[in-house]
Amino acid sequence: MTARSALGALLALGVIAGCSHTPSTEQMRVWDADLQRLQAQRDSLQERLVMLAASDPRVRRMPQGDAVIVIPTFFVRGLIERVFDDVADNVTLRLSGLKAHVSKSVRKIVTIGEFTVDVNVDEVVGKLGPDKPDIVFADDRIRMTLPVSLSEGHGKSTLRFVWDGKNVADLACGDMDVTRVVSGDVIPARYVLVGTLQLGMRGSQIVCTPKFPETRIRIRVAPSKQSWAIIDSLLAEQQGVCGFVLDKVDVPSILKRVIEEKGFSVRLPVDKLKPFTIPAGIRDSVTVGDRTIAVATSSNTIRVDPDAILYSATVRLK
Amino acid sequence: MLALVAVFAIGCAPSERESDYLARRALLERQNKGIGELIEEAQNGSLLPTDRFLIGIDEQIVGDLFRSQFPLERPLGKRFVVRLDRATIEFRDKYGVITVEGEVYRPAAPDRRTALKVHGGLGDVRIDPVTDLLTIRIAIDHVEVLQAGVLENFLGRAGKELMGSKGREMLQDQLPTLNVPVGLARSIQLPAFEEGGVRVDSLTVPLHLAVERVIALEHKLWVTVDARVGEIEGGEKGMNVAVVKKRKGRR
Image 1 (cartoon, chains in turn brown, yellow):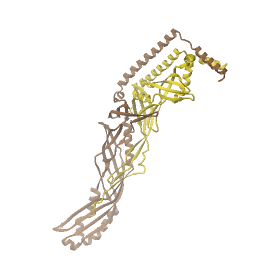
Image 2 (cartoon, each protein chain N blue to C red):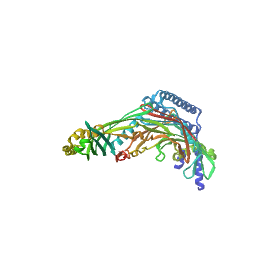
Image 3 (cartoon, each protein chain N blue to C red):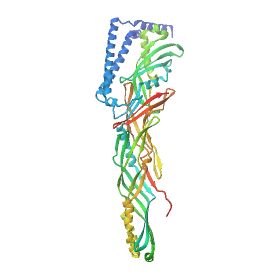
Image 4 (cartoon, rainbow over the protein chains, first blue to last red):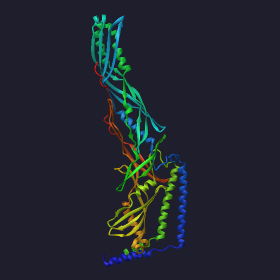
């Protein structure tokens, strides 16, 4: 800095310092009055706001705590519906290794033989589809009624018919051991899964735990026309030899009863669904600048109201 | 000559008493405006919306977290350092009242310090993309130079005002943010499970979050967040629920 510019700077600062004027007593009185008026207005407005807030049902029901989190049930409902819709719409139910076994003695005065019919489901593939779920928020839990439809599907099974003739029938008909593969379509059905989502705390996180009872659905399959034709021709071949046995056993009825009426009971493991964490929560630590501060929470309360899930906690910084 | 006129113009800035009055009036007017808006929202029944995520955090927690980093020193331009020592935070009037006190000095002359007080309110809020935590900037209204150290008598009030207005721009980027210990995850993980012959893959439900509003009310900071469910990942390729009965041995 040259001597000239330094002098200029000093002059400028001197001027600045010198130009500040002292307000008159009257002026200061006006300012004080103005500030008092604004302050009184603020206090009055603040008082009114406190009264309005106190009478606002949404403010009044807020739980006490240093931290409060309110999750609208509107959001949770939408989330459940969306997940259920996406998941259920993409579920392919693939059944295999299922078995049905029927055995019986046939008597005509004396036992004329024993038969067994084994149906082995090689594979049944069904497609699930979601229907509109019913979700209720009450009693600190979320109750869910989730209807699903088994709308389409097909499969094939191996049918084995064994006849072990006894006494006269053994002499007349001998034994029989026939195996055929039959196919069919899954009979559409609607199932309802009923359960709850329970809210709880894991540390400082809000955790949703699905609670479903053991749930079974019954899959029924209607043999195709082609399959009935195969069975009919098979029986027709044997009819001449031992017609009265086949009449007595009535294989088509057994088959119909086993796979079309009784069906196969399948357990859906919805009772094994794992808990998941709600996306909003108080953290165990916060990094502020270059320091990490531990955050302790206690006295957590969690409440489920019809329109919101409310969570509050006492927070202490360590 | 022009420079001299400019200097005069600056030099005829308000007196210290008038500056105090103007700063105090600006704060009260802002508070009254904020409280008035809250009253209007309360009368319309929209003070705390029910169809949005709502996070409330006590001013004491936010203040303690903010103060936990003090004393904090940050560079102010190329030649100065600001040291922040104290802060008060009040959440009552929609915009909040935040006061931070500290000093400015040149590293070359650390004994010559200028005390300052920063007045501000709630600024922009964002969800930190790394930590998922809510962070709030302090919007500076006014920087008050309280004591100019050895320059005190020389600078006068107007000189300190000049330093304050210049410092405001520089401080805006250097003030630390307010931190809220509430995290908002951007997705929900539905864990996979396998039970017997049934296997269900994990799903990721992405959430699109946007901070809508921040208000200071009844000693709490209230943050309203709009959350929407995105495209679910993991289920789009279809999910197999396979039920396979184990063979018990052939008859």
